[in-house]
Image 1 (cartoon, rainbow, N blue to C red):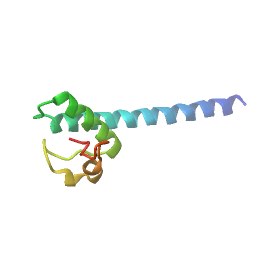
Image 2 (cartoon, rainbow, N blue to C red; image 1 turned 45 degrees about the vertical axis):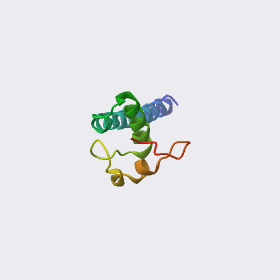
Image 3 (cartoon, one colour; image 1 turned 135 degrees about the vertical axis):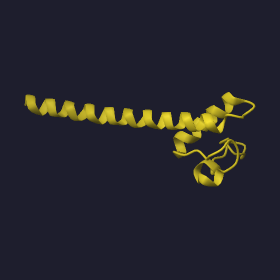
Image 4 (cartoon, rainbow, N blue to C red; image 1 turned 90 degrees about the horizontal axis):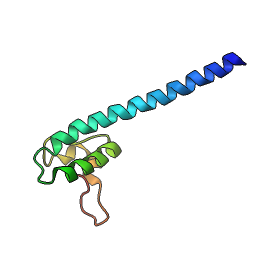
Length: 88
């Protein structure tokens, strides 16, 4: 019984640590890509915020500081509640 409890605890800790590492990796990917994407933005904090949201949902960010949205269809097709592009 004690071995079964220890095995279950080990399995649970492995699952939790792998999901934490995956989200950390995704966050650092998005951070670096959005820093590059918003480098020339007039309102950097707003660009960075929405780029981060789009990156986490789409798992990609187009290259460059403007345009190139064809590289990432999800990023290109996201719209805000007014029907305008959500992602910078």
